[in-house]
Every structure is written in C-alpha cells, then in structure tokens.
Amino acid sequence: MGRDTSKEDGPESVASAPAARGRRGGSPNQSLALAAMLFAVSMTFIDQTIVAIAAPEIIHELGLTSTQMQWVVNAYLLTLAAFFALGGRLSDIYGHRRVMLIGTLTFVVASAMCGAVPAGDFAQAWLIGFRAVQGIGAALMFPAALAVVIAVFPVERRGRALALFFGLSGALTAVGPLLGGWLTAWTWRAIFWINVPIAVIAIVLTLLARIPDRSRREPLDLPGAVLVAVGMGLTVLGLQQAAAWGWDSVATWACIVAGLLVLVYFCWFELRARVPLIRLQVFRDRAFQVDTAVLFFSMMAFVPVFFFASVYAQVSLSASPNQAALYLLYFFIGFGIASQWGGRILDKRGARPAIKLGTALGAVGFALWAGKLTTLSMHDQWLYAAMAGAGIGLLLAPASTDAVNRAIGASYGEVTGITQTVRNFAASIGLAVYGTLLTHRTISNVGATLRDKGVPEDAANDAARSVAQAVTGQADTRGPSGSGPVADVVRDSMQAIRMDFAQANQWVFYGMAIALAVAYLCALRHPGTRVTQDSRVSQDS
Image: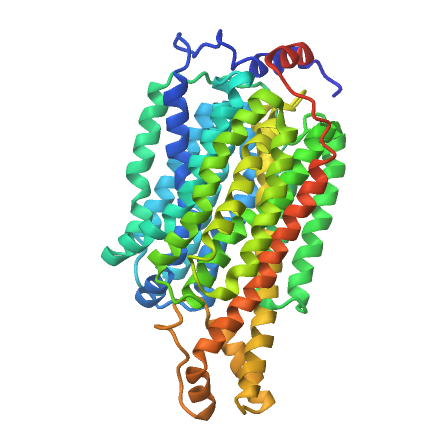
C-alpha cells in the first residue's frame, strides 16, 4: 500500500485478541459491548420503516403534500448513503467508541427535534432538515458500532457475534411498522421520541463495557470525503426521485450521470492520494470482491422487500398496517433463525458455503413467493416468505464479516464504510428499479381491467395512473374518490384491481429472485479461503 502498516494497522487488527485492553485497564466486556451496539443501531433499522406508517398522520397534521412527505423519507436515506464512507474513516481516525457515541448523540438529538416540529410554514424545512441530520448521525454511528463489535471479538468467534448483530438488528426492521402503528395511535411524534430512551441505554452500556478506543494519527482526506458525498448523494437522489420525476426526465438522468462521473473521479483521486479516504487496493482481494458483489445484489432484494411486501399486504390483501407487519414476520422468522446458522458456518468452514447456500435458497424462496402472490392468501405464502428470509439471513453476516476480515492494510471502520455504502447504494437502485416496474405494470393491468369494463381507453389509462399513485395504503379505507361513471367503475372493480396489483408485484418479486440468482453466480467465484486470528496477525505484521 506504499506504507508500513505494522504499526498503524497491526494493533487494530489484533485488538480483538484476549490481550486487548481498554484505556482504563481490563479487557472489554464483550456481552455488554455487543448489547450496546445493538441498542444503538436498532434506532437506525427501526427508523427505516416506522416513519412510513405514520406518514398519513404527519401529512394531515402538518399540512404536507405527498411529495413533501417523500422528501421527509428520502432526506434520511440520502445523507445516510452520502456520509457512510466518511463515518467509517472518522471512526478509524478518532476511535470507534468515540465516533459511535457522537453519532448516537447526533441521531437522538435530531430525532427529538423531529418530534418537536412546529406546525406552520416552517414544518417542511424543519422536518426535512433534522431528518437529514438523523442520516448523518446514523452514518457516523453504524460503521463505528460494527467496528466495535469486530474489534472486541476474536476472528474465530466473530462470525457468531456478527450473526447475532445482523440477525437481531435486521429483525428490528420488522418492529418498525408494529411500533409505529401503536405509537401513532397516541401521537405520531412519539415515533421519533422513542429513540431517546433507546439511546440512553446504548450510551450507558457503552460506558460500562470498557471498549478500547484507539485513534490513528492520520490526516482526513477532505477532498475525497466531499467527492464521495457528492457522488453518492447525486446518484441516490436521481434513483430515489426517478419515480416522481420519471425515467424520461432530464433531471433524473442528470443526477445519476453526474453522480456516477463524480464517483469515477473519486476512485481516480483516491488511487493517487497519499492518505486516501478509502484504500481501494482492498478490492485486489478476490474474496473481498465477491463478498462486496454478493452484498450488492442481495441488498437489492433485502431492503426493498420491506416496502413492497408491506404495500402488497395493505392493497391486495386489505391488511391493516399492523397486519402487514405480521405478514413481514414470516420473512424475519426465517431470517433470524438462518442468520445464527450462517454465523456458525462462517466460524467452522468459512464464508463460501454460507453465501452459496444463502443466495441459492433466497433466489428459490423469492421465486416461489412471487408465484403465490396471486392467491391473495397469507397462509399460502408464509413458507416461501420464510425461505426468502432464510436465504438472506444465511449470507448477510458471513459476507459482511468475511469482507471486513479481509481488511489487510485498510481498517475495520474504513472497510465497514465501503460495505455499508455498497449496501445502501444497492438498496436505492432496487427501490428505484422495482418501483418503476411496479408502477408500469400496475398501470398496464388496471388499464386493461377498466377497458374490459367498457371505460374508454384514454379515461381508463388516466384512471389507472391515478390508482397506481394512490396504492400507498389500505385499499378498503383509501379507495378512489371522486364522482362520475369512471370513478364508479373503479370503485366497483376494486377486487379485480387488487389482483392486478398482486400480478404487478409478481414482477417485482421475480426481479428480487433474479438479483439473488446473480449473487449466487458471484458466490461461485469465492476462493473459499478462511481468515483466522493467526493469519491476520502474520499478514498485518
């Protein structure tokens, strides 16, 4: 890498050994450290789904439009993706424990301010602004928290620890809709305030765990940080707004192309920087390449499935938000059980068997699940939803852990920043592509249904577009409004429209199956080598 890493990286590489000590003496308490990091990152996972449940109440009380509410959601995701790499690097330079605490405080203060938004003209700017600050806090917190877990557990026990970390934190995403429905019945502001007690617990446990906090005397690559933030921000913005602006919009493609060009320049810049933000040489490791590719394609299914399965349940199955959350529990039951199995496979046999089996099982599960969507029955789908979840659960911790274990010459926080940036970027692509596909197929299917009912073609197409834009809530309680013969036909056709929407969702779920199949092809290229404590020490020294 052009520098001696034995002094800088060696101590961090072996910080997980039994001899690791905190600054105040004594070994770190691994159980308390893991619990503290789980409480911290649980806020970021729950926050991904809980806001969507409260969206109608927020819109009603603050007088926002649906487009403004979309920005409330996107502001968090946008800053999260843009600043992940910077968060990982800052945790390396200033210490994982310190940056995790700063990120947690930033996140919880912003959460409290989101809950305190005043009604009136400043409501939109206030809420969007503090949601963006939440994203920055999460971008600081998550890579540092994951690096803490990696640092306090030895390599031979790390797979099981991270399986628990990813399994529980991932399953907490399903808690979002349930918790959101219950809190919103009291006040929607509580969905933000709930983060305050969680953050207090995380901070207290962190202070009690005696986590070592080593800093590295290196300059921060500010130009690189700006470039990756601008590149990721523009690209994700274009992908997120494609559904609103349209794929034929100049603004959509201007953001995407400009963002990608900035990211290409960022890579060129980093390869020539003396102390880069991200040491791209880590991609020379074939196993790291495969791990990153598997994470990319699997995240195109894992994150989008929360949204699309929830909307499908509410529209096609006429489920309430809480019932939709229970529908997602089938997926998370498989995910939670398999994630522990994947961690054990990683510890005993390495990452390759786990990611091969996980990607294959996930591809089959999503494909079979897609085939059952038109039954309009949860009972007929639970097994395949659980299979899909089990596939993701098997591969997630092994691929993530193995990638970080390959951080030879780089560092845990830095490589975590890379993998988490890849995951968020893939999720944004998945949401944009599947969202466009769902809208297109819904318009096509509903238009055909209305034409069969005798509605003229132009009126049928207009009504189909209105239905496609309105299917964001429960079909029974949010049916089409308006008067006239076309509106009457639409209301009378709701059962057929539910089936049309289910058929449109089949394309989305088959797309997720294809993404997992591509991930499986990538997994076949994994060299199958394992990283042990001895090999890390010898390679780093």
